[in-house]
Length: 58
Image (cartoon, rainbow, N blue to C red; front, side):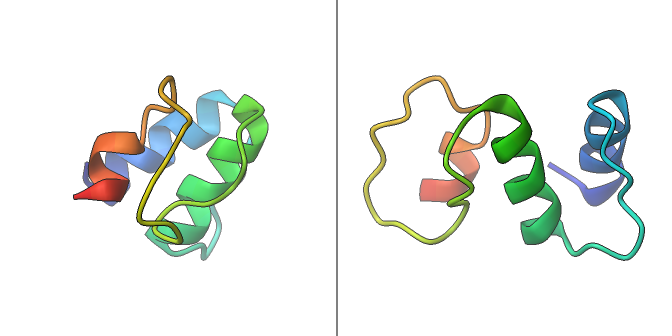
């Protein structure tokens, strides 16, 4: 997913994506969704309903 699309998602969730990088922004969204903010930090994931799972583990 491109950064512009991620910023739109963040704004809808009330996150102000000032100068955040893609990884930081996704982790902020994960946290807001109630998930562990772990994007690109693990090789295995048990959070099957996380919208970033496919991109994260690729």
